[in-house]
Image (cartoon, rainbow, N blue to C red; front, side):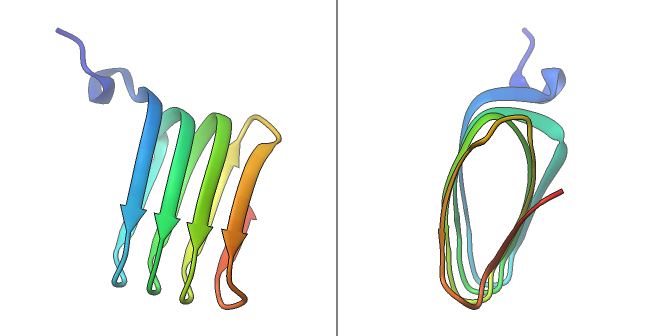
Length: 83
């Protein structure tokens, strides 16, 4: 059986991080991701189709994206950047 980790790709990901934690998956290709990043946490990922999310409290999102379908909400203390 071949799983998503072996293939290094997934169709959909729902990612939630908080309390200063981090999620790094730049070598793992995700088609569509929904991220929630809270309380000084960091997410780094690779997305091929769409990216939606919500950031707050000094959190950071860095992403590689091969599409323009990015819908992000964030407060003034958080940052979103395309790599």
